[in-house]
Image 1 (cartoon, rainbow, N blue to C red):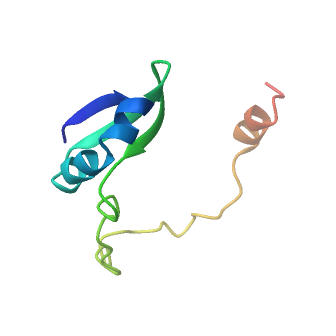
Image 2 (image 1 turned 30 degrees about the vertical axis):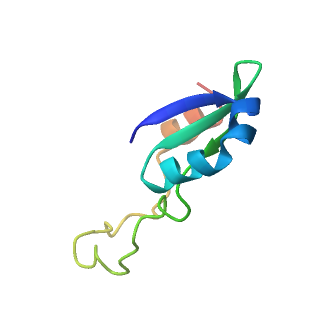
Image 3 (image 1 turned 30 degrees about the horizontal axis):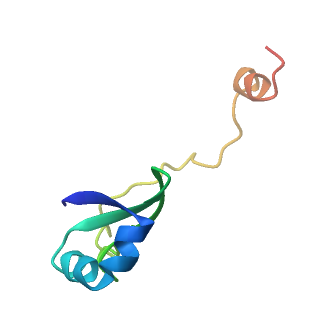
Length: 81
């Protein structure tokens, strides 16, 4: 994805043009005194499509998944070693 940076004055002056560019895939960063403050991106394009159940049968949870940890590991988590 292409990206460009514009200052606030330019963004206000050319908002329609910037929106056309964003709708065609270009990301625009708006800066104030050279520091980025906002980003214009196409609406709704950042959400990946969800596919419930696509990992079904591909993951395995061991039988001892919730077994207590050994004392030396618990001590390390508690800062005792």
